[in-house]
Length: 485
Image 1 (cartoon, rainbow, N blue to C red):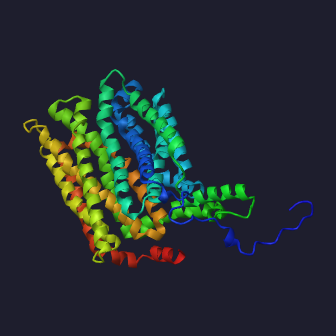
Image 2 (image 1 turned 90 degrees about the horizontal axis):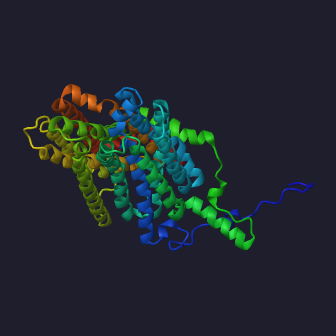
Image 3 (image 1 turned 45 degrees about the vertical axis):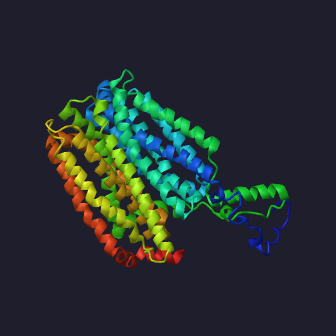
C-alpha cells in the first residue's frame, strides 16, 4: 500500500456494496425511460444505421464516372462499393468487444465519426488507391451501427415493443442502399458529379454524430450501473460502493474466442448457423445486386437516364414496408397466442414469415426477369414485381436473424458475429458482377438464374421449421454454452 502500510482487510459482505437498479421505475434504468424518449433514441440510432447503409451504395452509380476521371477500369471503380461492404465483415471484431467493455454509446459515436471522416477522405481522393482504401475503412467504422443498434433497442424496449423496433431497424438496413441507387443516379446526372455521392453521406454522418453526442444516453445496463455507483461514491464518500460490471477485466483471449474463433467454428460445425447464414447472405447480397441491375435494366430496355432508371427500386422499398407491417402483425399475434397458453415458444416458430417470403421472393424475381427484357412490356409491369421482391427480402432476412439469436441464445454474440462476417463477405462480391451478369447472360436469363437460386434456398426454411429442434439438441457447442451460463 506504500509507506510500509499493510493491505486492509477484505470487506466481509461485498455484495452489500454492489449497486443495482431500484426496481422497474428507477430513472437510471434505460427500460424505465419514457416511451417518447425511447422512440426519440430509436429514431436517432436507426438514422445512424440508415446513413451507414446509404453510404454503402450511394457511390455505386458514380463508379463509372469516377473510374473515367481516375483513369481506371469500371471493375476497379466498383471495388469502392465492394470494399465498403467487406468492411462490415470486420465490425464484430471491433465493435462487439467495444460494447462489452465501454457500453453502447461510445462505440456508436466513434464508429459514426470514423465512417464520416473516411467517407470525406474518399470524396477528396486524388487516385483510386486512396479512394478504395478509405472506402474500406469507412465500411469498418460504418459497421458500428449494424453491430450496436440492435443491442440499444434491446436495452430500452421490453419484449412486446422490441419486435416493431427491430423491424424498423431492419428496414433501415435494406432501404438505405436501395434509396441510394436512385439518389446517387440523380447526383451523377447533375452538375455535382461523383464526388458528391461521397460528400453527401459524410455530411449526413457528421450530423448523426452531433445527434448522438447531444441526445444519446448510455443504455447498456452494466455501464449505466458503473456510472450510478460513481455518483453514489461522490455523494457518500464510501469508496467501497461499486457496480458488478466494474469488475470486468479485459481478457483479449476471451474476446478473440467469442468474436473470431467461436464464430468460425460455428460456421463449420453448426448446420443451422451455416445454412441460415448462407440464405441470409444470398438475400443481403442480392440487395446490392439489385442496386446495380435495376439501373442497367431500365436504361438498356427503356432508355431511361441513370437517376430515373433506378426509381423502380421505390417499389422494392414499398415491399420492404409491407413486410415490416406483416412481421409486426405476426409477432403481435404470436405474443397474444403465447399469453393465452396455446402458442409455440420454440425458436422455430419464428420461421413462419420466412416460409411466406421464401415462396414470394423467387416469384418476384421471375416476374422481373421475364417482363423487363423487352420494351414491348410497359415499364410499370417489371416495376411492380419489386413489391413482391422487397416483401420477400425482409420476410426472409429478419425472422432468420431472430431465429439464430433465439436458437443460440447462450452464444448469441458469437452467432451474430458469424452471421455478420459471412453475409458481409459474400455480399461484397455482388457489386463486382451484377451488371456484367445481366449484360452477358441477358436480362431474362440472369433474373432466371437468381430466381432458381432463390428456389434452391427454400428447403432451408422448410427444413429448419420442421427439424430445427433436432439439430439444436445435437449441438455440442450449444450444450457447452448452456452449461457455462
